[in-house]
Image (cartoon, rainbow, N blue to C red):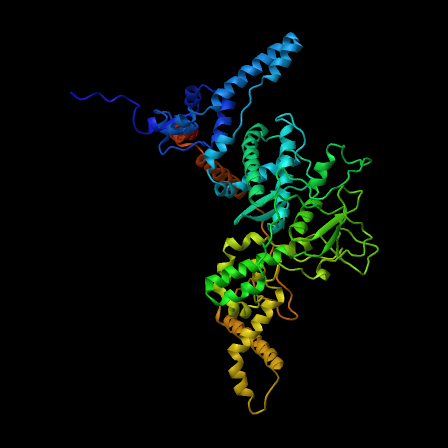
Length: 603
């Protein structure tokens, strides 16, 4: 005799658990359950059949895989969360009793935990961590700009700021910056870290609005994992590139005791965050740059080798973009981002000492090559170039120093296009079009340097006009040349203008012939000279037409409302409408009978 199959033991019912069932199985509250899922990387899923997974209930619920919940059941963090809950209850009880000694002992024995084992579990290698580094950096840079809020601990802001400074110093020391773009969300930056391109967003420093409809507690849980990930990865990257971690300045800077920017203890961190000074290395790294002469000889081996060599030469050109250049920043420009780009490309930058600490030279220094300003200047020195902040970003994206006359203070700037648009299909489109077809259409031949691949698709309005003249001359050129051969050669410009006039004349003649063939409408006939125009009086809209129009609008609006009804309520609505119409029909029939009887009695 076979065993009886028990219900809800196989299939979708056993493969999925609702959020309430998962919390009951793990014996966790909703905040701790969400926190554990965020740290372990477990996310809700959508079953193929919600009704079967919910045991016949099709109400909207959150489902998880049963195997994921079984995986979470063995996590040691669950016990830490329970101990933290007990700690909070004991601390609350000691506060209510005003027992200071007991409260102090409870605070000292607070249970603590780390997430290093979770990071190793989710990212076994450093390459896996680099692939997901962009999202972590975005959240860390965002929290570094936030003010103090009651939804999370203020220590998270200080920790985020410290990790941002350490990461930016690593980018400067390795000269890893590759692209940058200005947007309303912030500054998009791209860096090459161990062969992996990492893109993150640096928010604007002037942002003061904090939305109130955001759950900062969930973001704080995500930040708790991201800070552990980025901190572990930075420690590995610093040691891999021969840098001292935590970072220390390689030069001795005497702190200013009269400084009003920060206290004596915070002065060193502020000097480190300004990115003006190099950081200390554990060993001298020599021979990083390869000579371009040796690379150019390898280009003749193969196409793939030539492509790799060109890429390496481009990287070297970006790394040495601002070598030997001294740039002075005014107080109105974004100092941190521009200093990051300039220092990552080998240059030096400074600012006025009243703007911030760590200024290396003053504005009157005659060795300054460029001065970045964002307002009209009354006095300018002839020994330096005055440019706007966009020049730094466009020069980095172009891989060369662009002409400074296009970025003078107060002048209209060239378009600032995103350098990250190369992967959006524009390169393939340009390859299919080709240079010949682009020139025939009056577009730009090639790509404008520094403005991305989309610059080649821009055409000024006069380009279409010129392209039309060229195509018309190609079509009608042999005919005009044959008719004008007895009179000798003519000028090309005269021939093009003659072609345009002849084309317009042919168009007018064809239009006149079309008017003669078509039927003339007496209402649209133009009056002849000396004839008075005929004016027909307009008609007032009747009440019946107004009523019909209003009724049609109401019916259309009612049909739209009927389409938005759920399927389970639509049948009940149809029955209700049918009963109303039947009742109205009965009323109309009785009214007609009454009218017929009254008219028969009168006769």
